Length: 454
Ligand SMILES: Cc1cc2nc3c(=O)[nH]c(=O)nc-3n(C[C@H](O)[C@H](O)[C@H](O)COP(=O)(O)OP(=O)(O)OC[C@H]3O[C@@H](n4cnc5c(N)ncnc54)[C@H](O)[C@@H]3O)c2cc1C
Image 1 (cartoon, helix red, strand yellow):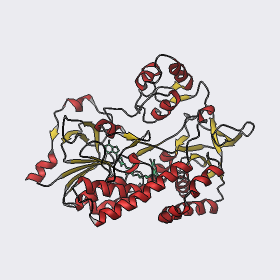
Image 2 (cartoon, helix red, strand yellow):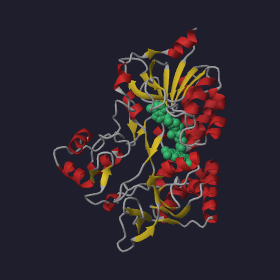
Image 3 (cartoon, helix red, strand yellow):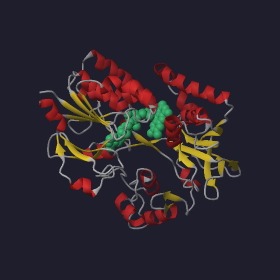
Image 4 (cartoon, protein in one colour):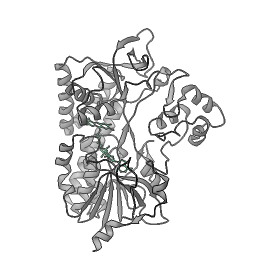
């Protein structure tokens, strides 16, 4: 009987996962909550379909767009069950389906992370990812005079997308000091030879910024946003290597939009619900073949480490190949594994060059909002962390309501955990919002298998 592999996520990692599994002869159900394939990287639908076309058209691939995995159920034995709602997120009457695959590849990607600062909740302050999605997908610039700030090479493609959408970029500010960034990027220089493509891409962005005379500064951050009803000015300051502010270096810059990014937070609710072990704090632990610690469950892409779209696709290929039962010593698998290892070395370099400085919380004031959904302030969290709820994410939530709002701690969770020293912010048995009416409907089980068996 044909092996059935369910792949969650149709970004670079999930598309790689589907392609890898199809090569083994498996039947694939490829699921994504978005209308189009491509994930965060291939935002322009024509590009996305050019990349995804061969997978989606494959006779053994069942493509489920606008389909959300809202829960993963762990049976006593066997591969976890996958609960899906099919249909537009805002529409009534989504179909409820349950799949029991032979293997599961999880590739749900990451969110961009923003550290809070006074005024970050003002209209006109965007995550850099949201600004980029608007610029790439809709050709819309979030403002006419935009400051981009945060940490990591992702700031450069965001600036490039905004320039192409017609924005004037005041500056790009990297919080890491020049010495720290240079040390991180130039360590073990021989490894860089395997990443000439990435280096070329970054050089291209840098050249575009230079052509538009966009100043790029290191060791500087936005520590406050001010404005009457929306952002009108950003206060920037010079930072020490630990990201504490150098007193007297504050400067006000007039802007009508501010884009901020401090790296990425992997979307861990599905792997955590499946029971997968984590490593290094926020990433899913995988072995050489992208196998997680749960039998039959494989992981790929940003949930196993932040290394970019090419690395995500390579991990996906390997995960899908393994999930479909492909031989580990197949020459193509051996080559893919080598490319994946190089990508991991690149991820480690990236993390080393752009760590979050330990003293960033010094930018906060007691009244600074940390959880925007519930308007929980830094002061509320400090009181809770000093009280009986210390060290328990659940108790901090109940005491302060941080993370109980519509985003369910996706945005503030890691920050709250860091500020209060409380534990895992990723435990979320219901991964995506679901209506009670949808839950009440009896699910349709294993449609893919039935189609296959006919
Ligand atoms: C906001 C943002 C912008 C980025 N922009 C750039 C850029 O410009 N240049 C660059 O080099 N890198 C960029 N990156 C990084 C790059 O996109 C990633 O390296 C790459 O896309 C990772 O691939 P992935 O498949 O792991 O995740 P993604 O590309 O994020 O794909 C994950 C997919 O899973 C789907 N999904 C998630 N949860 C569920 C669920 N429960 N049910 C169903 N489907 C689900 C999502 O809809 C998404 O399509 C960006 C990342 C982010 C977060």
